[in-house]
Image (cartoon, rainbow, N blue to C red):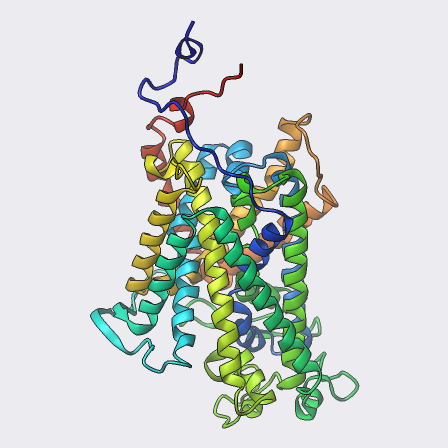
Length: 528
């Protein structure tokens, strides 16, 4: 009797052997993927928008506390799923197993179309823009090939267009980073992890130095009095339950006055985006050593470190610059956190501490940060497309590994090509506005999978069980659902476009689902 007789659905042309992902990532490398993917350029700029929205030092920090609580609960919940199913694809696999292949595909589709590639494009182009601090010819206005300007137009709650299409020296530098990292990660996960370890360590040092400098030589009497003076009355200003905050509904819509629970939900668009991508380590689960231990632990250590650092960085901003400021102010102190030049709060802070070289130091820190973030997301994202291909839900070539390096070569290249397209089209900045709502939906669905799998597979091995289950996972679902409801009501430009992008995946799923799976075509493992 032949092997084919035992497995009648095996494709007759299937290869005899397929290389497998190599388990080479230890706990340190896994943790640096979590940290490095989370820390990009967001923490250096989003605080200005959060400050304008909350208009209160207490609520400004509360926004980061909300983000921290949600991120840690989510990481602790994902730890159970990761230890239970340590497979390449991570979140895609959890949704597929708990809710069905359609939901897994819709996550992978949105990840490829916007979440992963759009974020890589954004941080790569940010790398190019900050490179211009050292090389002025690298600029978003220095065009090599300007194809077109797309005028803005409005479709319901969406404002589309207003994009510059072409290649300038800033996005050319970003494209070079995308190409370099795609190729580098082909040569084994060890090389990608080495790059990640080096740059994550450097960016952790840079942020720690920023905090240390701010709390030592950077403390400013004007900022301290403005933010914490009068017996902390300044700190709690506009933070009472009766305080109302203005929110513009949609784009060009009326101004609504909302309470602190609503405004904290609105500003999560910035803080949650800055703390996102912590789930990327689950995508690489097939390459983690002792994954049932190291995956949950790396999620806890990585998210715990980043959230702690983010909180103290934001607190550091408050001791150096006043929160409230004048948009027409001539100096960083006059403009404050709310109106820091081009929203670059970190640059304004370091410029205040070191008037002569602060901007250059901050630019160097952001170059390190964005490079490391792009590398971590490049490495991780291709593993999701690999898992989708093995299920017959993506290009078949993406499900093949390099015979020597055991890496998803086609997945890395396809991801890189689409990322380059987003860089050239200039569309990534708009697309990123839409993803937080869509991601929150997938996070809610994934954490709901904990409850589903506890019921469907009560006897499945769970080396780690979600801390605080069922209360903490339920709390996350309630908090995330509240943010979604608020964004639907007050920020439709961030919600409906995200839903449309997700729903566009349904006809694509119906097409791909008719194709044979790699699992059905592969040669089964045999033992002597």
